[in-house]
Amino acid sequence: MNEQVMSTGPLSAGSLKTWFLELRPQFLLLAVVLVPIGTAVAWHQGSFNLIYFLLAWVGTVLAHISVNVLNDYFDHQSRLDFHTQRTPFSGGSGILTAGLLEPTKVYILGGASLFLAALIAVYFMTIRGWGLLPIVLMGGLAAYFYTPFFSRWYVGELLAGLGLGTLVVLGAYFVQMGGYSWEAFVVALPPGFLTANLLLLNEFPDLEADRKAGRRNLVMALDTKKASWLYAALVMATYLCIVLGVAFHWMPLLALVGLLTLPVAFKAVQGALQHHDDIPKLIPALGANVITILGTDLLLTVGYVLATLLRL
Image (cartoon, rainbow, N blue to C red; front, side):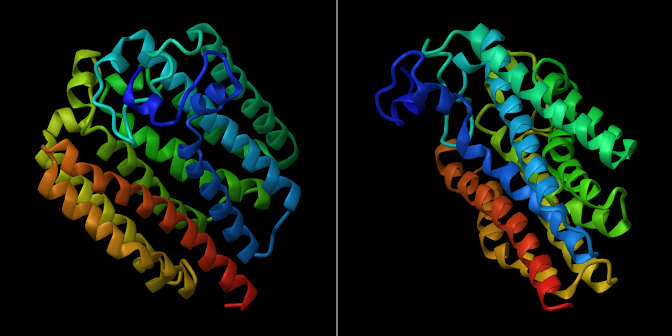
């Protein structure tokens, strides 16, 4: 049994705890913090429906569960997870490689989660408008085909940033407003950069395993040193979007609270640049990256909520 599974304590094949861990719940926090961003922007513009918000939240979490579970399934089928150098932030759950669940049942779980998310999306399209369709189609295709197809064409990072970043924020905004705005688009950019960076940095430990499995990503295309500079550039782009958004009055002044994660982001960038080729020493940077992503997304929501309550 691999270290990642062992670290969770004793697991039995097919137990509820094993199924729960197969969802990779620690990564689902990303879906939890994304939907409130788009919702908060809509509330600041005068529209908020609690039922729509909660339903969009459920749908996004279901879609993210599908991404996690199908990724685990396809990586098991390709044998990639038998070669990964696992860290607390990358390398899969290890549950399928340990033989604790049947791969077919895991695939069914991933497909069922995506189907339920699609039903919620169809409901929103019928009551809020078919302008949501492009987001649903792009998100659904990225969720299902990312591992078996898109991860082999140097677009994985882009699709991750869209599917679990920009598109979620825009979708959450749309279900509240029934349309889009330039402000929502600007606010949706930082979460997109951050999620793309989540995948980018997590690819460093998996480089050789990904290569053996036939994947093609930006870390392979650039090498880890150049990829670490790309990571730094995307971090800079994240904060620059917030600063420019406020400077040009596309976002309220209190959106600047998103900059409070800068010290943690600096540690992540410093670690990536210094230890891009030393995985054990890179692990603290992987952790700082997760904190930067979740913290910045959360603080953007906080900024908008405060601006709404203070009528700023």
